[in-house]
Image 1 (cartoon, rainbow, N blue to C red):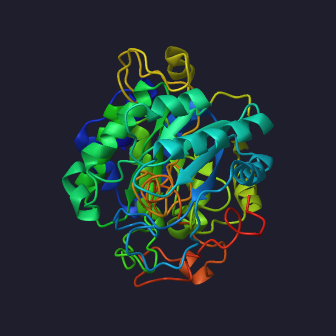
Image 2 (cartoon, rainbow, N blue to C red):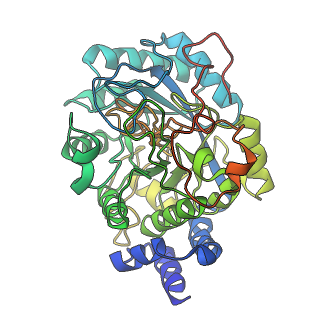
Length: 445
């Protein structure tokens, strides 16, 4: 179809599609979904080959967030029966991170619930970053701690952080419908603070909260303007005990169209499938690897993901390969222009064809991007990644919700085969995390 040929050509040139073209991708029929995946896959392979970056979430502080993000299991007033604990000690966090690194992850996303860190919290996280890097010299570390005050991003950078995750989550016009305790502008400000400090910015969205196609286009175009290196795409995990527990608006085909649209709009950035992929893509997860070049390995912030070995088998079976620790994630033009990780030189924005948008290499794909719990962080949601949000908003949900909620690998086959949105609270699809960080049980990685 002419639309897809046009979008492929633009993606290979890093040229921004028109809004009408992006909307047309979301409006394609289920009969055309494989054509859409094939077209966006050409853009993905051009910039990232067949590499898949693995990221691993460590929930440093779970639950009890004062923010009211509707999608997050860690929100104020949440009835979700998630793990609740205060800050992990640096050695505890380092042991948790080691499990993901042993499984092939090259980036560790450190998430904490809450509105944002105090200066004492920044000290704690700085000590944790040092503990992790002392044991793993080449690891990328992304922090997802919520809204940042002046000077905090610089302190995290000095401590060795490579990236910072804070998701926009939804459009500016509808942001007040999901959160009242902070604003869309607050989130934008934190992403800009991370950029200015030389951190690689990771910022994404949560799909499936009842938003319109226009809202999805608005937030993705806003992300391109902000020019993060990593864009986690979270799919809402309707966590029982949260206001959005019965919002089941997604099908696997709808998720694929959303991922394809993000790839066309931001062709040369790390697109990460974050929270909710097991819940909503289900058996069609391998197709999504043709669109995104980054995923979370193992469990999310407050929910379980599928077995880490299943992730690795899926990548291999689909004909992709895990990105090695020595490989640079971003295309050369972005990594080279930035110099330091996350720095932006003269650049034009995500995928800009005017010289730039250079950023360092990282993860964000790294960044949080996958929140489940909710909060300000900006990258949690139903996802797992720190960089991924569905239930939460940023990293831990409260403060970051882009990663968490993921579904258990044991979702029933009848549900996996369904091409229609499910309805009602579904505890069979969303398993609360009971292992890993904050428990005495081994993590899933």
